[in-house]
Image 1 (tube, rainbow, N blue to C red):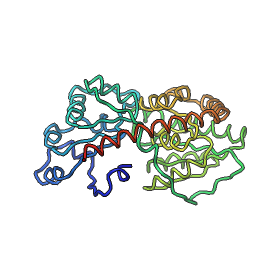
Image 2: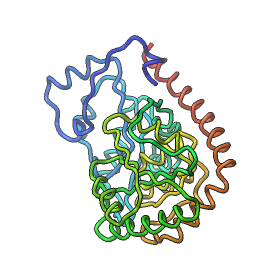
Image 3: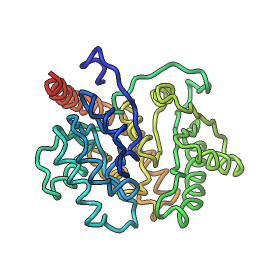
Image 4: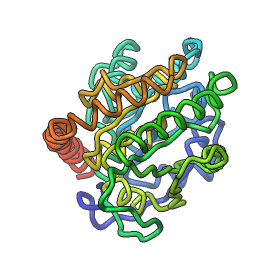
Length: 319
């Protein structure tokens, strides 16, 4: 999205980890020769990245823009430490512009004393799609995409296998009740073990893994009628595709993103997951899909306006 506003420009990618350690003069020299430093990341404000190195942040002279950042906190996690919170506060006080993906992250920053925060939604909502024939879907069936978070999260050891079992039972019911076609949507390489476990339980399952190409995954999402997902990636792509969602939440971000898109009543705490809750909510959501799609379309249009406004502010910053 920046490309269409700041043409022509060249960019140099760097890892978020560069903010976590002291930086040598050569790196800072390269960084400070740029016209703009754009930092993004759905999990930037989290135990996984914070605290940043204060000296590294203070050494950035190039104007900093924080773009669509998210705050994550696994269910069962302790609160961030004072050092971690102060690190997030420092980064935002050094930034010229700050934007976040939802009200939850906005509140996190405002509680730290950051006031000028723009809520613009997750930028990936507006990801384009690219045609793919990786999987053939039956046009005559209700197509349900499923996704189970299999990267490590705090309650993972206790609830992963139980969650897989409950998903399988719910999918078996939906196949019998709706003659549904089930498609596993892989967003992390560790999820291949989930798809394998589901298949070993004799669940008829088509598996989609578009690897590093999110545009092709977005194309698949657009062909579905419902997504039962856990990963935030899955929620964002489903909403961006206008597809109704049922969410099994392992993180506070899940609850808050679903609330943000007007679907707070379609979330199940991973600790309380059972097949009946999944299947009943899935059927209810499918029955209400027409209204949900209208709401998604309206909200997406509103969020695009906010994205455009923020992009205009970035452009003015570069002028």
